Image (cartoon, rainbow over the protein chains, first blue to last red):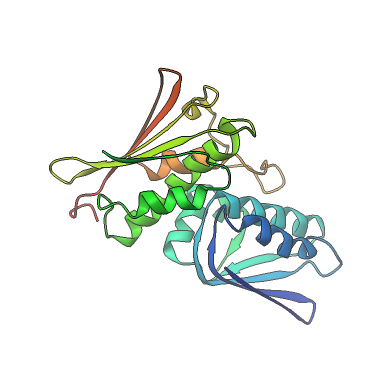
Length: 100
Length: 139
């Protein structure tokens, strides 16, 4: 998996490429950890290249959403493919994270 | 059934998943493969992480396809502590982000993605059998 993180204005732009599974979720959580603190909580994640996520990925997206909400920010996930979107739908994550 | 015993299994989830997904019993359809791989990962991870409580143990993984090539069967067998994942309560997916506990979605995803899951404890082994309709009509 490839993760690109850029700051633009007060927002953090993240581009995810590849798979999030049990083999790399620890690294993904480490890479996302800095985004879970600080005073610019708005995060925009481009999931266009994300081909797969297991429950290991979901737990990190939930941690991210909780931390963003605690800081009154907004998390947006965009361009999700249909397989990944179904995982978010089935688990109710589509209702608690803004997906566009 | 085409099966293989992995022993030990510590840190070998990816290898076990790859073995199962490479089986000739697996369908070609991308949507079916996504659902099957996700279910396999969640079920295998459960065994690798929790069955032997940090100790060393084995997992036997196999696939089978019925005579009509309609129903794929995935069987996982381990000798870890007895654990029936089907007895775990489903998560409340109507809760808000703040109320949602972190984790506990793996088995729920298996149940949603597969057509049937059965569990039995047999001869000191946990046996988990997941089935999925893989007929071309379905895909």
